[in-house]
View 1 (cartoon, rainbow, N blue to C red):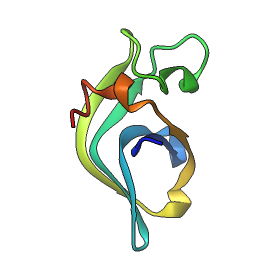
View 2: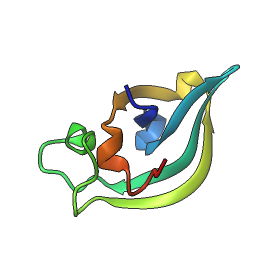
View 3: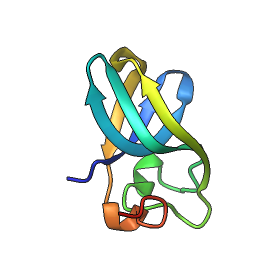
Length: 86
């Protein structure tokens, strides 16, 4: 499983980043805010990687309380390699 996850937070915020749990926080490093999914079949469509229509905004490190997170989606790291080079 990749450490890169799509995170759905409260109030409709969607991020993608390097996911880690640290103490009482969920930390997304090298994160992007997903401004536009760019999908026709829902958010899960970008799990293998962004579509040409996906719009991302670099946000750096995002820290969330675990109760702020509604769901996470595992991703295919290879599909996100442009945004998250090793």
